[in-house]
Image (tube, rainbow, N blue to C red; front, side, top):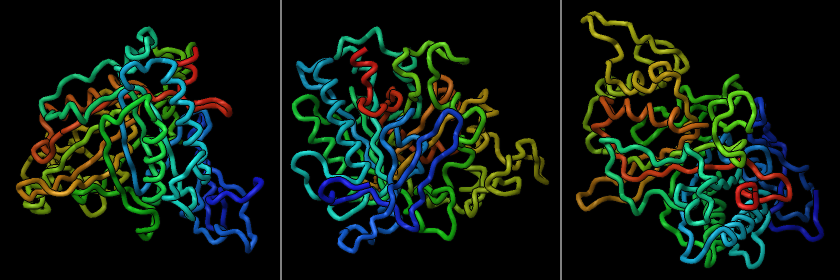
Length: 418
């Protein structure tokens, strides 16, 4: 698959490229790589599979939701500039979509590229866009604002910085190469031009692919396996729980038609009080979570995938998994079946004045309805999670993420031109 003139970062497939396609009913995000260019003159012919892996921009759903979590992530929110409205927002989303499509295909940004990611492949880059509650009043589209986008309730564990919360527009960027991720972040910020200004921006990371002997659930900065029991695209009810159905479809909600195929994302910057956590012994840490730190298995036995036996008692007559253990409180069957797809990044922003690490989790979760996904679980955690003593919620946002753009369209076109 060639163009006239070789792009500096070609969409390649190599012998080690994954060429994945998730087979969820309803079409989960896909992955594809073009045939390898074996020409010795190709500057990218020796790209490893890590660099050559590419994710498709166009599709039923936006990329970056079911895409395997990457090793580097950036979250960024914008506010529309004074005087900017629906027309300017549409032009901005058109520019952003064109830029995201090019970069995810391993091409240079249009116009004057910064060359930050020169010589690198697409590295599983994804760019995902969403709209905040305030976007609709700024653009005169209040009647199209989904009810599910109503502000999240207050939680007693919140210590939220309003300057680092919410926003008119939101973008998530992920890649398995930090320069590729930064290149996309810089391109998106530059393309905002005079239409929008940065409200806040956060940087995250995860373990790199291939760093372990076999694929496994990632660990957070507390050393705990984080992501057990996540919904899987192969689950029969995955689409129903994660994506907004088309109007008139079975199980359709009152969401506006432009949200069909979309999802709602809750973003929380959760600081981990690591100095306090690390003073606990291993047994105490495992009791707080309700799982073994070594392999993520429940304290009642089995493997990471084994369902915890919540009614099992020890020799002392007490529950093996305590009533306030994190694993008990977050179980879907303990929350009316609430489900959300967690796709977080860890972060470390240096040390505070007291010398304690400013580090933790950029919690990102996806669901078809946050009032049935995130909110009931967080309310229950708020009432008595043993982990609450060691974390602090410092920023928050809720965004409506529309479905994917078809070829020739831009993200949000059904809203902005409907």
